[in-house]
Length: 129
Image 1 (cartoon, rainbow, N blue to C red):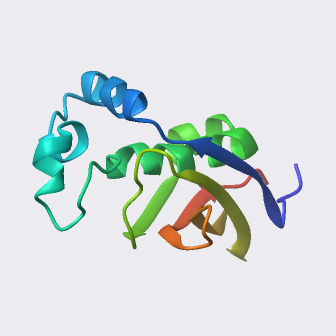
Image 2: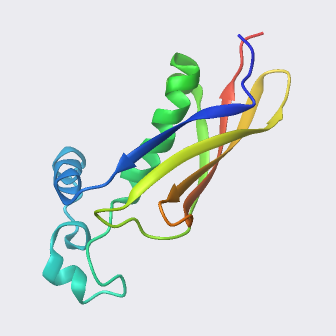
């Protein structure tokens, strides 16, 4: 299998209902994500998406391109840059950063509809020989 230079972009519109479902699935019921009254008193001013939910979009992008290799042996190093709010649409894209004999590393960006980066990731996946 050839190592792609560019990964397929994937977009998601984040909703408050999605945050509630993610909280139930993950057990992370932090009021910053769920309670609009609580979140209004924080520096964010309103509820924000769970960081791990946003990272799941990165994993989805890698899994669509690399399947089992990503799911079993993929690694990522992430930097959170800005919050994602309900109503935001985020798009995950990736470009090949480097390769070795056994791995490929991609620079992944999760970007909001206004063009701002919310998460940047170096994602490394084994490549078939």
